[in-house]
Image 1: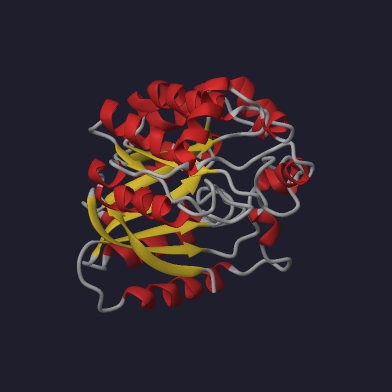
Image 2: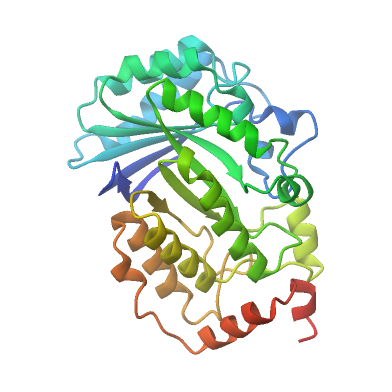
Amino acid sequence: MTFWTSEDNVAGKKGIALYVILPTIGCYRYRIGEACYMCSYPAEAPKVPWSQEELVKYFKKALKKIEGKNGPIAVRIFTSGSFFDNGELKRDTRRQIFSILAEMDNVEEIVVESRSELVRYDTVRELVEIIGGKYFEVAIGLETANDDIADVSINKGNTFEEFVRASEIIREAGANVKTYLLFKPIFLSERDAIEDVKESIKKAAPYTDTFSINVTNIQRGTTYERLWEKGEYRTPWLWSVVEILKWAKENFPEKRILSDPVGAGSKRGPHNCGKCDKAVAKAIREFSNTQNLKFLENIEHDCLREWEYIVSKGFLDWQLQTW
């Protein structure tokens, strides 16, 4: 089953989030052979498309995970594509899902994802009106504000200008904007990747309510995996994530800054030396849940010095193999 709950930040407070991945046919760019280089999620989409009725039934089943739970609850809906893609979810299906959530008093936050080119004012406004005063975010995968990196290192198929247009539409329609940024695209050193995220936050801040720093992990069958297998790419250091989160919250305290380092401590996931990974990843998640910088302070381990040296020198990943 592709739904689960975890502690999370819910509309600015510590709460519980229900994550639901609807088994749609997935991202249209993947279907036309233009997938993002790091992403294998659409490959896991069902080979036989589900009916719209089956998708609604599946969503209702997922909601049973939060029955009887108290405190602030968020429902975050994914499709391995775009919630606003009519090829994945029809208008009536979106309306049904939001009508169900509108009746759930314990649900305070709702988040859906979409590529920027699929955002339309009428589509967003209709859902805003259905759920009334609940906090509603549309998450856009900007990944980077640098169009060259988005093209060469990610194959995103979007520009920063298109992200700005989508964000303005979302806000005009009465919803909020979550911006996904990918930390450490291929072909960037650890230092350059840190700077790219910081510059992207600066540029996207006027159009963003929540930043989600998505830390690269190695998914099967991707361009990233092929480079990683050759020793030409190292997944990010967790120390880098700590650096980014501290900088972002200190410079943009009014923004919600989130990160959940998936696969932290594994070979395919973000990691430090292997000994401190669990503790550092826990600190990152505690900060995300609470927005309290105290969880990122006074974290120490011997490998911190190694990370500082690598970042200061700007080593590329292939250079680290002979370092």
